[in-house]
Length: 245
Image (tube, rainbow, N blue to C red; front, side, top):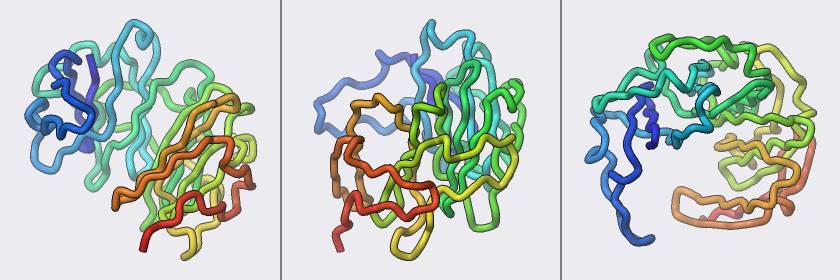
């Protein structure tokens, strides 16, 4: 079964066999035909369920920097019409959910180049219908663009991508461990050349994965992670993709 989380803080569960199986180039089925979504509600995260998940927690983050940790078992019984996964303040949206266990660390990144790193244990587990607590203090005009987790910060880098195609990775150890709720530290030098940050991901030291970047206009580039330069956290980065036009 899959858990579908939406921007309005709700969660749905759907067996995999109910998803249409089609060719790679097919359009697929509109998600509103599978889930009972309401107006302006969109799926923002999907997690598979299974025996390996039980005993762990789901860690959530909203665009305004609110975080929440809830036991996986609280999502064992989700009705067709969905359930509340987190109570949201007006104008806030749920966008990121990760599975965490003991000794995990959380990294939150904002579009204006701020980032905070803290232990997942700083956030107490609460029930589904609770509102959560502040993970990062977001200034007016800023918002969270990504959240990721790691179990071994000493062997991980943080990759950040900016809207004009620049990017870089920096050792996570350059981000001092803080307590949740602060303003964070600088994660990139944001300028008119770079544009705002649009995404961030934690890269494990021994990762053999490739990175695929897709622009709004459908431009695509694929590269090996090892080709991305490692730079200090306050730098601009280099061009990973040159945008058309």
